Length: 256
Image (tube, rainbow, N blue to C red; front, side):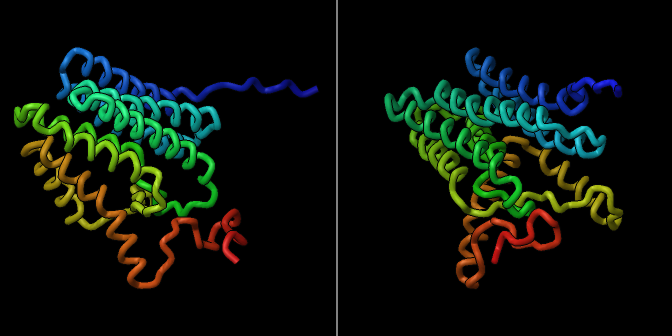
């Protein structure tokens, strides 16, 4: 009788996921200690690590259902609960009940966004996200906090801007607006030399003043989905990100 193979957990991709989870936890702890600049950095580090765990799993052929669930739970902490709590501790508490309502709306929308992502994985066009991805929403909220902290602008002066930004980021996560996912960018393909030069230039620009550059980039990305939606609407093209591809077997027959 063949011996049953024991089920196990792949270490490498889950190490990245745990590190991303630590980034979100670290961000909350720093916010509790009034180090909001470090709190924002913790969330951005979690973003980088979150973008790597899936790629590492695919490259090493170590994908698993456990890893997918672990990734979602980590995202909920790092990009859902952490930004909401940081924003509330930073200035939303000054708005009274409206402040915690905005923080809760953001947190609830992040949970809804992640749940919808999990159940729609098989039918959504992989080139696009359905709604603003939670890491980008977190970057909008914590990036603004990071920028204001660096510029030494009093928190009380921007309470209602933070209120609007938290609601915008939260509600945009649960819209059907398409946001480019960059998942069709092939890292294994050779590229012209000029691409490497542009990447180096981009890194140099970010280092001029990371808070301004990073927040600016995510503001543009946070608006890009609505621009794509309006352009598709104007051209009479489908605005849904439900895949219309027939190249993959599991996508055939979805659109009759």
